[in-house]
Length: 540
Image (cartoon, rainbow, N blue to C red; front, side):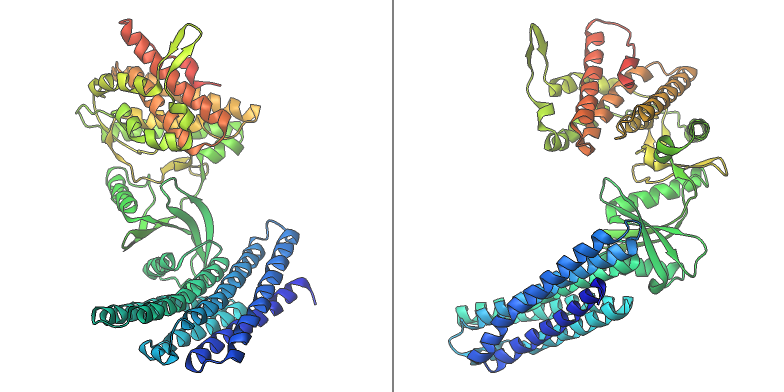
């Protein structure tokens, strides 16, 4: 017998034993006996051992499996999760019996309609066995739905117990019944964890049942079935949205599935619509949008090409140069098309002030009080921000444009075949100072956690080239305050970027550059100078 077959056999024994444990618990509540009590408690060790065997074998197999065989690794992870949660179901059986022993008279259990709970758990276990045997996605869904059914039973039981307490029923008895029903409900949570693990292994991406319901609704709009779908992880945004590329046997082209906070996705949907009105084709089409309370999902058109981050790290120099040229040309076109002749203030220092707590949470040492270095006074960082705040409020771009709003290197896609640029992740798009996108793009290049000398040279070249493009564009417009706004924008972007970087060297480097920029602004203002942008702050 090979090791995987051994895992499968152990899993079958575990399922059988846990279902027996559930049946024993139900029987005990109906007709308690010391013999049955001993059997329930004695079986727990065997169940725990089976779980441990499965975990150990899954870890061993995962170590022997080629990393590129993601399907096999995901399956082993799912089996390990299932085994843990089956053992928890057994534990909850013991907890139920422990609570029942607090009753002076087992006839008091007549106040609790517990059999429907056990029926649902048995139902979930049988579907779990089918899902394990056949990789049946519908069976895994049924396992997950067991939790919802148990929640409904628990809610009804809770209301009945509350009414009994309000009517003067014996409090200890009612609380004992409540705890018993609570542990029965918790069995559903464990089954849900196991079902979701199997679904995630089958679909190729970690997914929860709420997300799956949203995915099912979204798929109906493009006439695809869940059984034919595979999810390929793409990433997770800093706002917590999860993104996956979705393929299916009945569709020639992929689509992008994005799930996250409703507020963020509504903003993105509305921004995409605005982009499509202003400049059709620069952003992906939306195939469907589904809202489920606080979480929602969008199905986007899948755009060919690679992010600028990928190009910067991997592409040949000619392709990188061509991509950057096309990006700058696209920006100029967007800015020209969307220009509104009205001044607009980015208020970079106010943005920074709003994020200081987030910076402090990751790097508390950055915002320490000032002090002295020899004879030189070092002002507290927050004081520098506050001194620049009043100045920043007076600075305005001479006109507004429709900006990306989060113009990071991973939110720009270049398709070399068609020589076109596309924008993604657009929930922050707005009519704003173009300096916002410029400063974010420059900082997002600098903060890339790639430290090889050759890569840092490429990054420095991109930063220098893009900076020169932006300065030249501002000069053509006669935008005289652009260098000062860019300094404040970069001070903001460098500092806030440290929230996402744990590397001590890089995060400190960005923070010090933010401080350097603010000090340059304060010093030149105090001296009454026309602001000169300190270009040395941009390059390694």
